[in-house]
Structure formats: C-alpha cells, structure tokens
Length: 201
Ligand code: ATP
Image (tube, rainbow, N blue to C red):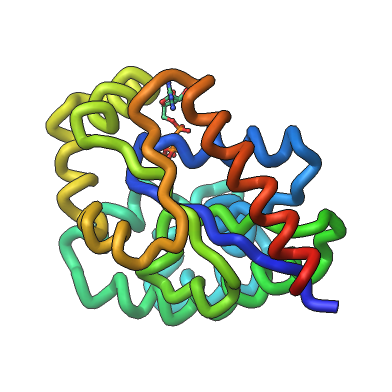
C-alpha cells in the first residue's frame, strides 16, 4: 500500500531540522531530500561519473569524491551548467526519494525538502507543511548556527522562493516565531491530524 506522505519545507534557518527531529521522535519515518542529494553524488555513484564526463575531471577530488566547492564556483560563473547538472542529478534524486518513501513503515512518512515546491516534489506528497519563520529570526538563527555573515544568509533568502508564495502553496503552516515548546505544540496537533488522515488514506 502507498504510504501517506507529508512534505515539509521552509526557508533557510526556518526550523525544518528541528521539526523533522520532533517527528522522528514520534517514530515517524523521515526522508531527507538533502541527504539523498548528497548520496547520489557520492564516489562511485553513476551521477558522479556522469558529472565528471560532462564537466571534466577537475570536479573530482584526488580521493574520487565530488569537489563541491569547485563545482559551486563553476556554476556561479556558468549559469547554463546548473541546468546540465540538474538534468543529471534530479531524476536520480527523485528515484532514490521514491524508493525511500516506499520503504517507510510508519503510519505516515515525512519528506523533508528545502526545494519541495521548486522541484515539484509535491507530486509525491499528499499534504504539505510549511515551517514559516519571520525573516529577522531566519537571519538570526541561521547566522548563529553557521557562523555566517548576515549578508550571506540574506542573499540565500533572496534566492529562495518568497515566503508568501510558499504560504499559498502549503496546506499547513507552522509559525516558528517562539520557543521550541511553541513549535512542538503546533507539531503535536498536526501529527494527530496526519495520523487521522493516514488512517483514512
Ligand atoms: P537549513 O535549511 O538552513 O538547514 P533548517 O530549516 O533546517 O535550516 P534548523 O536547523 O532546524 O533550520 O534551525 C535553524 C537554527 O535555529 C538551529 O540552530 C535551531 O536549533 C534554531 N531554532 C529553530 N527553531 C527554533 C526555536 N523555535 N527556538 C530557538 N531556536 C530555534
């Protein structure tokens, strides 16, 4: 039987990881799109061979791993390369996500993805939850966590889908503007709803 799949998304520093860890603590299986994206380009994976054949051996470190920094910088100065890269990785990421979702055994399963809406991963989900956080808090929390300059985080926020657009696309919105107790209380009531929805799925 197809599992009931809830997508979870949010901008940088919005609290996706904190929220997904809470669901995991309730024994809900979590598929993490970021982890899958890293897995498909590991040394020896077909995607990495295709990437080095497309761009050149300079994308590989001496240990055979992907040189992420070099590729990131190349894409920055060659915007067309981003599409080429995504044409290689996206189908493989999608396939691995689908396999992990299908292997889930909890009453429902969470697909955590920063690009849930942008990469149409909503085709895989029955319901979508946005962790929504005011920009000042995103800046404060993400810069504290990563020791990055505020300006760097701001640039990332600017490049992401606008908050309002995500609010329009989400079925459920958790406003993560308070302490963790406030976040978890909202997640608890959604968890009960998702259990009920999965039951009647
Ligand atoms: P990214 O997309 O950048 O990986 P994320 O959406 O996964 O971010 P988290 O890592 O969960 O965000 O949260 C960002 C930071 O803010 C973390 O250090 C986290 O502990 C903290 N944080 C999240 N929510 C709260 C909260 N309600 N109160 C206090 N700190 C919080």
